[in-house]
Image 1 (cartoon, rainbow, N blue to C red):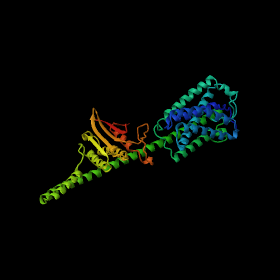
Image 2: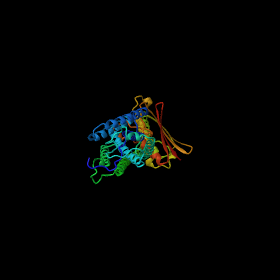
Image 3: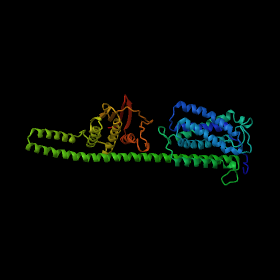
Image 4: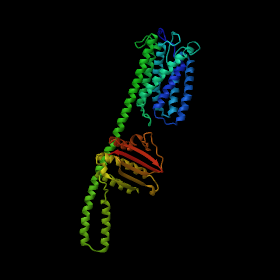
Length: 460
């Protein structure tokens, strides 16, 4: 190392380092989406604490020139805790571990700076100092003095405050019911920021003869704490930006689907109006032909033609023209697939909704039901029921369909799509929730006895 640090602070005890790194992993396990059972997470954390202590003391036996290898070993231990404790993917696990590593660096540096400033035991000495314990020992001399009740109290209080604050900050930055979207660009950028932050915060321990190094013990830790804090802030802003971009893309997809449903409604409305006019004209033509042609077989044929025309001219009459078009279109779609659709709806309850929202809400709900029901092998089970009615101060929309497969839902009640390209599907229920929220309503999903029930409550 180039240059010596004046009044260098004692090394951070490796026991403290291990606890800090482990606590950072636990904090992120509390805020990210967990795919594994809770007992597995608890067991992983228990074993992980012992493993991190072992890794730190094993790294302490390495020569000083293997210090970086010791830090990589600690990083690998943190990765295993997060990966096994939450069941993340490899890329997501690497991303979260990098965030946890920077947080551990920040908390350890801040705690040690406070502890040494209060001068709780331990004598100062000249030598390198870092989170991983680049030099020094946890032997009998100075380490025992740092196990006094005063030092332990400072450790508990400072760690509790720091990690509680980190939890409050990060809990809104990660989803509890869906994996963290981690692109290759985001993962590489995070690792690069982590490496730069670690290198710059520990530069003084490598050389004091640089424009970014300190030469006095407390000064070194000031620089280190500030650099670690800046790294954590940058990573937080990066995650916030990624989360906002993901939400924006999802909202764009939902709006595109709403527009698609509305365009489908407009096309169906135009087709139905054309069919209605055609049916009206054919009725007059049939009446004229019947007056001219009287054979019984011809009469029977014309009656059959009239029945078929009447079938095409039949439309739903709920009291809302938009809903009438949707129900008529979806009823015919059900007939083509051998599905029985029963609809009892008071369309007048939708007077306050826009045509686009009505088309999208009922279109999405019925499309999802038709898609699920059409997979059933037994025609007797292809059943869909729709009800629209008023109950107290609410308008209730209920769509039920029979199913025989396994449904997967996240904690928010959103269905997880079974299609391979999940990024382009699964917005049906999200779109319905989005519309309901616009009118101050809410959506609930219930599954019981092979019946899937989607209920929308809208204040009247």
